[in-house]
Length: 386
Image (cartoon, rainbow, N blue to C red):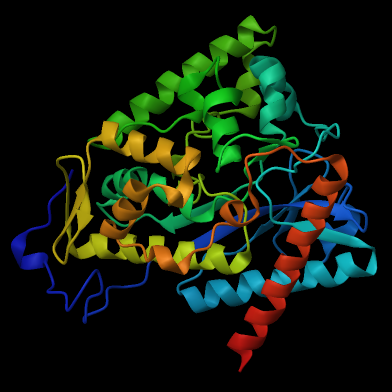
């Protein structure tokens, strides 16, 4: 972990905000939404992908992704995400379709892959557990890598991974109650059971060389599994490289020169923006702060970011997935790490109950959540246009 020289630090007035503001860290988001019809059944997006820039199909038929460009401020990010969503929603309304901000589709419908060699390879390697991946919709937050601080950024985002609890949005797999953060439970501990290093959180690293070695090791495991599954090495290497072959929740992305945090669920866009703002603020604080690992509690002060030991991070993550913000240890940890926990209302804790749903209840839940998203977009756009 790097330490900043004393003469490079700037005094902070309070918390993690400096009166001499550093250059803004660019940030972007990618958010996935399920598409349903007026009766709550999953359906394909069709020409919704043409409604706005940054809209794409995902790897399964009923899933749509909306991306922003890199933005230098929260206001810019908010405007772009909400504008793109509003365009998609207008077109969706005209076609009797809706976007659902649930991390799992809460259904037993068959979810089909779109034709893709990449997906075919993953599907065969992972086997029947790949069905868990088909039931996951998430949010990816990218923050710009800062010169000489990328490893500190990576390690800090690893330590912030329990913040996934702030936006848990579905407790269900199919129609059965699973966990407060069902998507994370599925993705980390079920989907990649045979390749555990691929989907789980990786420990802190000391430098770029160690990160590169980890990537190569995991890539080698992936290619070996692909060959065992019947694929030619050349075919696998044509579609995957070390960076794109791993699905660990926090990654350095050389292609975009970002650090990517892939853990959050899809949720209401106002909550996505809040989370991206909080994370970007903490990363901006890295410019003037020492980063080091000590103890099990973790905290952020004016001059330092103290990351808890990795085993402690894993315990906070597990509690965040299983219990969410009802865990007092998770709430306290996130507050010490710079989050205003009271600013979040995880949908999973609003809609969830430890009971199963009927098919009609599941369809109604999808429509209710779609309505919440539409209201969120209308209200937030109106508020920030005043």
